[in-house]
Amino acid sequence: MGNHNPTRRDFLRTAGAAAAAVAAPLATCPLGIVIPSSALGNAGTDGWDMGPFVKRKQPILRPTPDSRFQCPIRGKDVRWEEQNVYNPAAVVRKGKVYLLYRADDKSPDLKWGRTCRIGLAHSEDGINFTRHAKPVLYPDNDAWKKYEWVGGCEDLHIIEGEDGTYYMNYTTWNGKRDTMSVATSRDLYHWTKHGPAFRTAAPKKVYGSRSGVVVSQPKGNRLIAAKIKGKYWMYYTHPCALASSGNLIDWTPAGKSVWRGSHEAGAIALLRKDGILLMVQGGHASLGAWTLRQALIDRNDLTTVLKYQKQPFLFPEHDWEKKGFVGRTTVSNGLVYFKGKWLLYYGGADRVIGLATCTKKD
Image 1 (cartoon, rainbow, N blue to C red):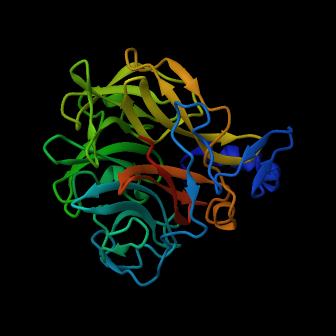
Image 2: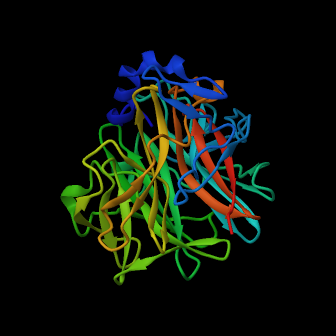
Image 3: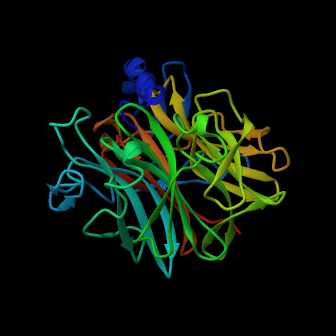
């Protein structure tokens, strides 16, 4: 989240008075709504949705001033994850969990005050992570600089192809406009940029796109891109607009969306027999917060909402979720299945990374 995303920021600015309503173990809203705390486990009450998810009390990853990186554009060392680490994607690979996360430096001499890069960390247990010393994706003096500098590379989603290639849909910010771009990797450490997702099929849609979540299906412990009617499908931007692709790199807008707005594609779009389980992020007026809900989408037309959670299953409760770079936010771009549990990684207050877990039902 940032200054260029008015939907979230404007919502939180106007809804600030309601933030004090959040309390654990129950969040009682001014309108008389009582929401079971996601710190104690919530969702899964109707049989179709995933849950309950139980939060860890403390973040699993925080910013650090210790990481240094030679910025190729500035030509000097920067503390690239000094200010914030948040909004991660997650991948299970060779018995480990890998987080690829948005990291912000402090650059007060730049107009936006920071540049975002993508960091990498791995874990044997999904909780305790070892960081890679340098970012794995960042603005460079390359063909895509006009999209990525000065704001950088930020909120991302990752999907794995059948052949083991990883595809990252990430948002770029040049200080004026954002763009959803694509990069690929075979090992998660080395990435090849391919530029904006819509630059070939829909050049007029290049700017203003973000948050691309590809429909996936489970294959063992992996989540693999799923084909429906011979194509890959993606939900993107705040109305969860629909786009298709034959190669997971070049995307074509379908000209329709699930909602009109205020619903940002979240952690997963999981293909199941009963539909597509889509996690969506958006504002909750009574809580005065940015939260996560689940919806079940028709797998035939890809846009009809069959079921929708009345209340969010993930929302700010802990102090570190309420206070940070942008307070009262829980933003999740990563859900993986690992050692018998679903692990939901999320950004707390645009400052740190939290974890909520759910035991998989048989």
